[in-house]
Structures are given as structure tokens and as C-alpha cells.
Length: 319
Ligand code: NAI
Image 1: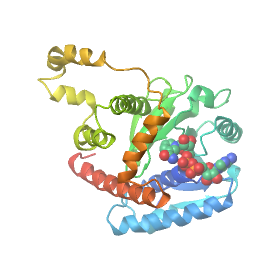
Image 2 (image 1 turned 60 degrees about the vertical axis):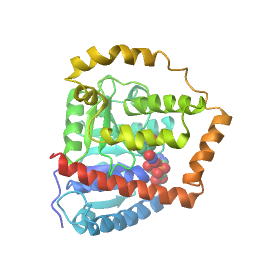
Image 3 (image 1 turned 180 degrees about the vertical axis):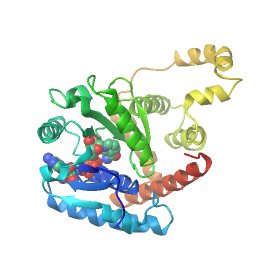
Image 4 (image 1 turned 30 degrees about the vertical axis):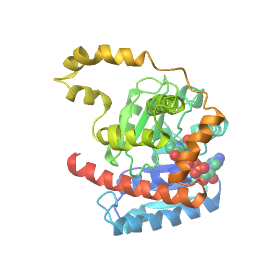
């Protein structure tokens, strides 16, 4: 039996994201309880986690210092939420993206917990001020938004409610660092948080360039995967500026006029019109036909690439 860290973690919702969180917390030595409203989901989560951990161990990609069996011994299912949260230090909610459902879960948790546990949501886009409104334990509430697949993409956006205490932010940040994730502090809530705002800015210009016939959809994707994306896996856009001249001040001296000139030519928010959607889809389907089999195979390939990239990053960037 593996020795577990003091206090346990509870995962509420044992779907795609709940399973990943369970594996990550177990890799850090935490006792994990998986809760779900559907008993079948808990059973299938435990089964798929076992298979995945064994296969990760075989290919040398299992996280943490414990063996797969040791990590698996830390994860158990629990069909009763009151029992599950007893003694927990962190509760990670992973139920479907539905404000009313999530509010109901947090109201239920609010009535069960003391003032020592952190109540955290995996929501991709619901604002903390809407999600945690009226809770007695609002100071202990935070959004911890992971990126799919969280086992290979370590970023987690931490987004506070206006009343979230700094201690909750600090504790969650430290906990996520401990399990090998890469948390960032979003200092004030904003629609889309940070990752999706950046992503939508890119999608927006990509769409305009394709719609205006400047570049084909497949070449547009290549600009990112074989161009910008190569750098961005290691350094962000701001550090890129810093390195592409003699520091940030020199970059802005040299290039800010050019950047502003180009930025002024950016068009309005795309309509994502049917005609362009069909054109882009046709192009993409030549590469990846949109039937479930081809999509699943391509996702598997993507995850394998991400796993290798994660390994490379851990070698070049000592934690
Ligand atoms: P999912 O649909 O795979 O899993 C949701 C689970 O919640 C299911 O097992 C379901 O039975 C359970 N559930 C439903 N009602 C419940 C209740 N009342 N009590 C307990 N469990 C309940 O959803 P997924 O993809 O795991 O998403 C979960 C959250 O993570 C969402 O808020 C989503 O926006 C967020 N997220 C998802 C990402 C993704 O790529 N799928 C990426 C980042 C965040």
C-alpha cells in the first residue's frame, strides 16, 4: 500500500476530466475518492484508470514516483457524497458544463464541509461570481480549469471569485505544483479566462485569412503546427518578443509600428457562416475524415505526440 499525503482529494463527477484529475492526484501520492451520481460511471472510471495507468507504466510515461499498483491503491470509488468529502482537503468538481447543475452541487457541498477544505470547479467557461454566489464557504471556492488532456498538458488556470481568500489561491497553486501541473493565477475573473481568450483571438484571425482566400485551411494549420507552435511549446509570445530583438524594449522600438499597422487591418468578428464552415470542413476531412473511428485515431495520435512532448519538456526544463 502506498503511503498517502495527509488529507484526501475528492473528485465529483467521474467522466473524462474527473478521471484525469484522479490519476494526477494519485501520481502525487494523494488518497483520491471518486464520486458520481451514476454508480456505473464510477465502476467504468476505476476500470479505465487501471488500464491507462498500466499502459503508461509500460511505456515509461507514468507520472510520479509510485508504481501503477501503488497509485491505483490510492483511488477508490464512493457512491455517497457526505462520506466521500469527510476529511478531504480538496474537492474537485467535474460534472457537465451546466451552471444550474454545478450550483446545485456546490450548494450541497457547502452544507457538508468545514472551513478547511478547498472547493474547486473544473469549469471551462462559467464565471466564479455566478458559480459560487451565495455560498457560506465562498472564501474557499476557486475555479481550477484544466486543459484536455490534463495528464499531458499541465496548464491549469486558477480563477478566483471576488471573495476567494488569497490563502485558497495559494493552497491550490501549491497543491497543483505538487502533482506536477503548471498552475497560473488569473488575478480577476474574465469571460473566457486567459487560455480561451488567446485561443479565440487565433481562431478569429485564422478564420478571416481562410475566408478571404489568403491561405488554405491546411496551410493555415501548418503555420501554427510547424511555425508558431514549435516555439510556443517552450516560450510564450511575450518571451518570444524579448528574444527576437535585444530584449523587449528593443523589440517594441523596432516592431511596434509594424505590429500596429498590421493589427489595424484585422477584420470584424467572423460569422462562422455555413459556406466557410463547409469549405474548411471539406479541407479538414481530406486529412481526417469526420467519422468517429478516424477522429478517435487522430486524437490518440495527438495524445501520443503530447506525451512525447511532455517527456521532452521535463528533460529540458528541470522543475
Ligand atoms: P463528462 O460528461 O465526461 O463527465 C461528467 C460526469 O459527471 C459524468 O460521469 C456524470 O455522470 C457526472 N455527473 C452528472 N451529474 C452529476 C451529479 N449531480 N453529481 C455527480 N456527478 C454527476 O464531462 P467532462 O468532459 O469530464 O467535463 C467535466 C467538466 O470539466 C466540465 O465543466 C467541463 O467544462 C470541464 N472541462 C472539460 C474539458 C474537456 O475537454 N472535456 C477540458 C477542461 C475542462
